[in-house]
Image 1: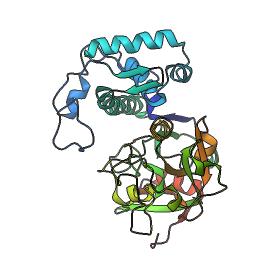
Image 2: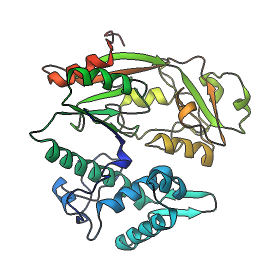
Image 3: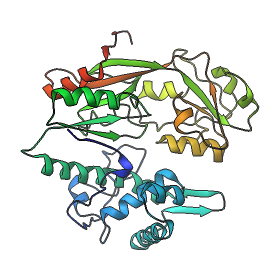
Image 4: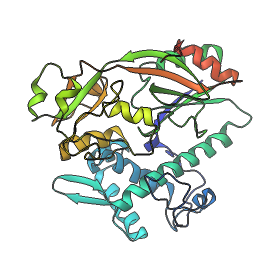
Length: 351
């Protein structure tokens, strides 16, 4: 069994169907309020904006997630000049700027933010279609969604155990942004999810993997950054990074520092004062550029340590519960086998 691991930004490493084009449309009322749409109907994605191809979209997503052309080029295994050229060509085709470049770094424009969401969906759809065609009549693929670094420690162990009982199956890891705690499970993009509570688990079977402590994430020059540990109240009076309003309510409250208390931590200008983010990378950039603060799983201190940010252990807050989730009821035997391979136990109903 081969194990294919990639994040949403690297979807479409191989072009599917060559160069495709889509037609820009108007926004859909049914779409979430946090982001306008480029397309009215899903079928319009199959056309794409005239002349745009999947490779350019993949380049764009890499730069949008890294917010740094050098890091994006390294991630794509290419040099920076051709990457910059492809992005300029994409901007010329669309007739708008996708990135705001300055001496302080790179930021997405409003148009870039819209395209980022649509590009991720397009690349993921192309990858799923390519995977279905390739796998039809050959082997079963288990698509595992993950969010906020959940379950990264379990991948090799689970894959090895699953391989022993399902040698003809494949496991593909698909990383979602932090706005969707089901990591694509409810939308049908994945078969099983490695994620974190709390969120609405109605219709899902959930198993606990482990608990993980949290850290406060603050600018390195903030006076509290030098403390050995912090309490949520120590972050009062500072803008907090926020998730979009349409995110799961329990999930959003937890990452706003409001779990258990039912009361919001006092912010400098209310809960609406901080920047809205969709990825961990955006969280970190908001802390560096906008002086925001927030909380993240402790593992972020190992995976995302960068200059200008301090990770301080959080002492008085419920730890993050890392879980495996799948649709409840009759389940695919291969999905059940993968869940057992992870070696998880069922979360109590009170969780």
